[in-house]
Length: 295
Image 1 (cartoon, rainbow, N blue to C red):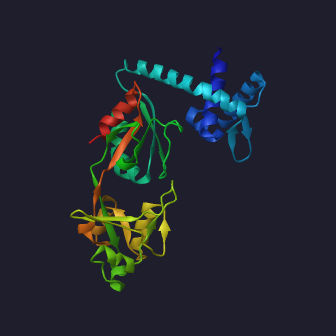
Image 2: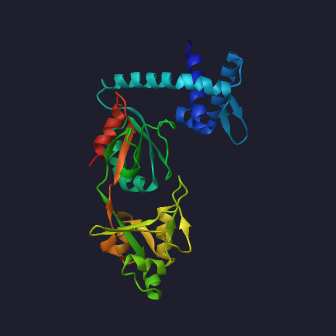
Image 3: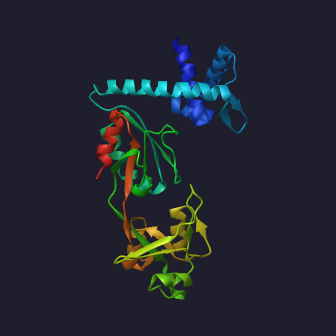
């Protein structure tokens, strides 16, 4: 196979997986126009259309899907073969693609980005921030970070944060008009900010626990949101009570911008875990990231 033919196939795989010429070009470090030219050349050489193209989307044709299914394992084998050579290098190198929720990006990744970049200058971290569930295998990510309860059993996982705890909070302005709840049942009288899971669309039921007694409550209020930062902002504005991760609101509590209630009913839960597919060879760059993040 000539080098140009391999490059055309690599371009096709990138576009078919990313469903976007722009994202595929960024992934390959190419201009979108160059990528488009490679795809046209490949389709001309094979005599078949591989991609459906519109002004808004790109998707594989039936022929393209069949070709992609054959090429994906082969390109994976090539990437792993190249990575084994990196084991002989003095320093890890290459790209690590991560998918993480916004909270993990700020709490887990942000504090170590500078140290990691300084320690491993030849490694590129490519981080996609998405709060919904993502199939990291299908999306070609090397690893993901999610709460431990959301990591599949088929994945290898490494703890990257301590256990976490919930907190029910409201603003001083809110509590000037509403008596603080003393028991879980009191929450039925309060304006509560709901959280809707992005992946399932289900509104989260607040979980409270004390001395083995548990309550799972479907709360109600003026807002249902799918973003923890926006929920905190709404609580700060006095909209109602928010069910938050303690570490996410600690500064607001210490500064008196938020007040915590039902603290003795706030359960702890497993924190964030980095996870990746089970496979025989782990890239050196990913191993370096795991070593820096694990707790």
